[in-house]
Image (cartoon, rainbow, N blue to C red; front, top):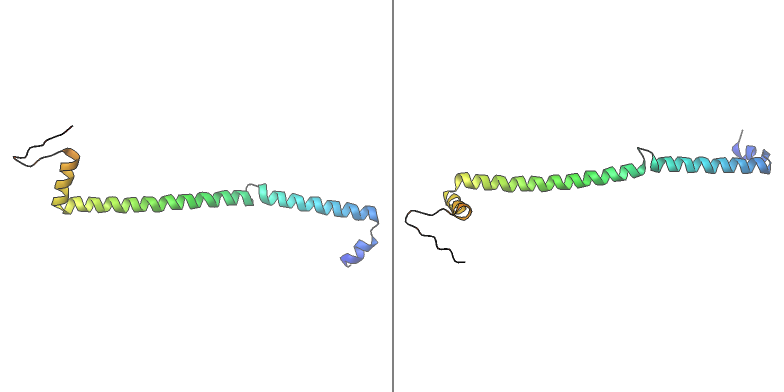
Length: 102
């Protein structure tokens, strides 16, 4: 049977009831899509969290790369190691004096 024929056979009260039930069912489905544990809002929040974690991960990778460069420079560049020792630990060469002005 065709849906149009069925609707024509309904009286006005039955038709209103059918429309009301259809609207309420549609609203329930939409609410479920948005607010269920696997709904659109949860998906949106999880997507934002993933983007934030990926951004942080990229920043940490860059920081690791820079630290690895510094480690390699310390291991392989005596001039850099000497400069670092002088700056960080106030080390002096033999027969060198340090003057501090305050």
